[in-house]
Length: 160
Image (tube, rainbow, N blue to C red; front, side, top):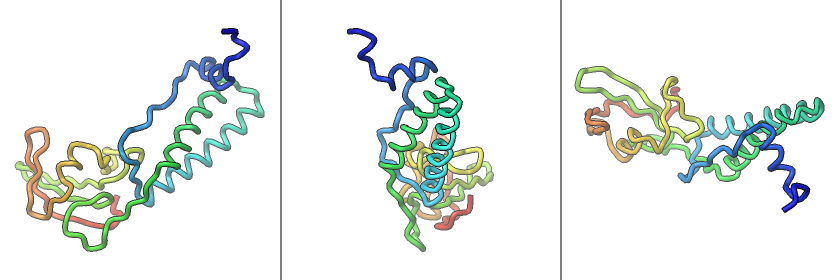
């Protein structure tokens, strides 16, 4: 096939040597904060794309276009999920305080995959820890990677 018949999008990706960002096969559950983050990313990327197009920066256009396609797909598949107020079992969007065998406490907020940032106290709803916690109550124990964690507190408010 002649190169003249290749899609422009393909040639843009080849310029920057970038492939598509993989999109998770899991449900795209998002918190209110996660949905706002997606919207902010889309707005920022549209601005970056306009600037790159004005400058004629083909490599930057390819990278930003790829990211714009990713975030557009994530916005289209986003499912806003808000925890039921006063829920006594661990659900998506909730904060969970755990205590390990050593007495050390940790707090996690269970969020969407794109929003998760363990260094800031949030974990993805598809992470092993979140999966082990779902449906459990205060006093229940969850085992992850051979370590047991007791649930000592639940919160349906955005603490992280």
